[in-house]
Length: 441
Image 1: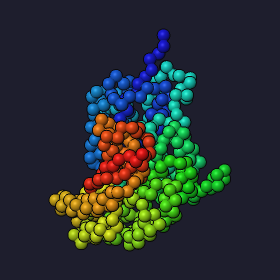
Image 2: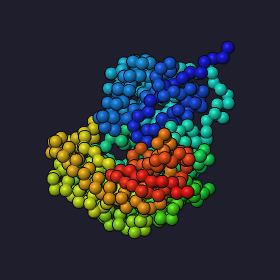
Image 3: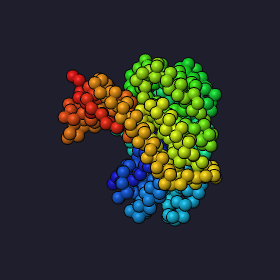
Image 4: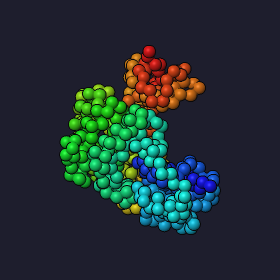
């Protein structure tokens, strides 16, 4: 009589970096012969990969753990809430939890699964069932490529280094091989992620790979990925001077003309209080130079309003920066204290009603800028990658739009395309966030 294949329910919360952690755990589970399901019912054990970035994310993680405990009862917790005071809070609220571990601690998760759900149905040919690049939780035509763990910065509003440790860069041959494997599986878009993509290789002193002649640095990685014939999108790039060397690769069509740069603010004093690694004085000039080299460059960014001590004049500096920089895509957060962040101890916290008013003014300012920049695309023909096709038509993205966080292109009545196709689209209409168009045949 054959032993039953054990099933692991899986809940993945948080950012793309956490999603990659989930992909790696699920790959290991499948290699060890476990079936993985996205629900709790009938699973032999449930793994919850938590997010601990801000209080609302922590609450969502705690709710997911509590629900898994109620629905299933056998729960393994991992991720960014799995260390320090958050881990103690999880154990206190859920005394029966089987194991709690931090982010990217795959061994602890696997040991717990093996301990509490031993697998007697091990398939000797299980390696044949898992693709070379592992299991992916994204649609088959795009994938996240994580190039490093951790971060060397100590931004005062952030606790990621406390959760994920200092920067640890993956060897460049390993990253390039994973990219090759993904492309061979049909991936059309590689989304390069880390905590600080610009710092790739700093921890290993930009170590040279003798076999390929490539150094462990962002520029060499971008060159290698740019030879693969797929879209390559860079996320979480800090505006260090060496970013200038990437722009010609974008202008030459090797990697996408897209930079995701978390500027966070524009006031030099607030940036100093935030302990940000790059200041804004020269940023406007550099943006201008980047756009001269690569006119189609899309810049997305995130900002925090209502940071402790932010004055009305400093907030106005931020609005002035937006007007001058003309960024394409922008996200904005109201400052919120996070347990363990040093910014909590700063004086003059901004009242919530003032934060809300500033957030609304910020979004109103940026909406006008985004609307105007998207309107400039009307009449152009742009490459668009198709993400889905429904009963109204197709939905895709331009080279200036990352999945989940940016806008989309609606192709109404277009049914003769499939996810992963890259087609030329005549842009006919726009609003604050999205575009509408027709496939050019």
